[in-house]
Image (cartoon, rainbow, N blue to C red; front, side, top):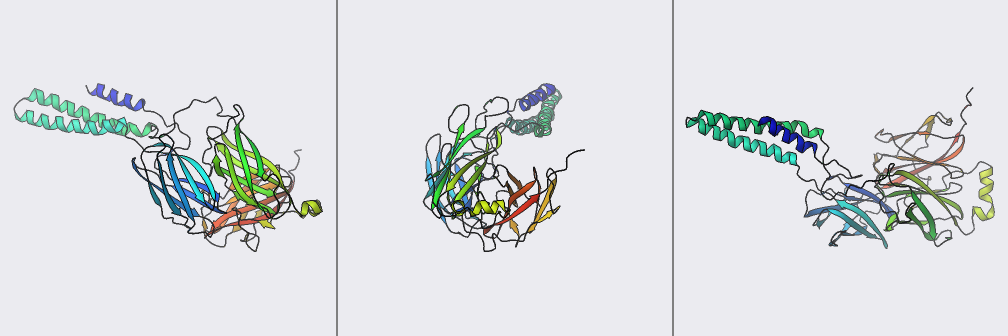
Length: 450
């Protein structure tokens, strides 16, 4: 009997369903960066312990806009049930707005702030009890009953039955102990509300094809415009609406002018399935390049690029921009924003000048970039800092993160692919603002092998 019960316990554990959902973790907070209402916010959806039950949502501001009201609406995709509320942005510790959800599974969070609307898909996930828990508690419960029964039977001078009941109690304890020992070795099953397991082709889903455009088609310098990114599946032609949260955002968009004097690191709003939009303003005419970093579920990270032009009198029409580039005077700094569309600090972003080691990097070899922040750095997008590097022609973009130095000193390691001049921007958050430090790097070509 003992062997039989142990075999049942092992089979139950072996048949447990493996975790199979990308980026799914019940009980964990979900953080989503959004560039909305002219500022940079991070929406925090706290993990849910049960349903029906409370869902807590807060908004963290990374610009001096504390108190900005953000209208919230949570809708269940499966039954359409909707709840609403209002959250106010806070610099560090948000006051969470509590909404009630009735079920697990796919939901949509609609955000409204400053006349802009974003619809963010997410899932309500709750851990559920497993067969292992049933075996553990059941084994101990049955063992306790049989042990008491054995003692009573022995007291009534029935030793044969007492031994049988004692053996059953030992079997129950053995099953419970076996399950306790082997359960950590078995992958946990998916939580309630997780997406169904979908069998995909080897290598994952196809990469995304993107079309970038501005509305209006040719914006004027100094006027607000919308950068729109439409994402399409290359094999089906249908909108791509299965983006994974990648470094706390559905997508990271880097917009720079051709001469590098304009810089924005923004997080566009999902306004429709497969459509991302962000509002921008450029104060100079000329050519611009936009890079979008995103990750599709089961497909890995991807970098997309598009170009557009801003009309009006400026370096492009006067020829000053091209002459500066020829003379080697181009570089970031004149309008290196703070990542949200706000105006830069008077010192071109603030912070101390970066230090490179070696002072003149060599292509193909790691280089270190260090700089000191004017205060204690707070995490932004899950990291202490970001280093973004672009080639002069915009064909190359690199993005690495701070190495976890802590305190007010930031340290990055980056390998430049080839010789030439690169435009670079280091970004980090202190207090209630995002600081952008623009600089240029001249890289020597690697020596040819003998």
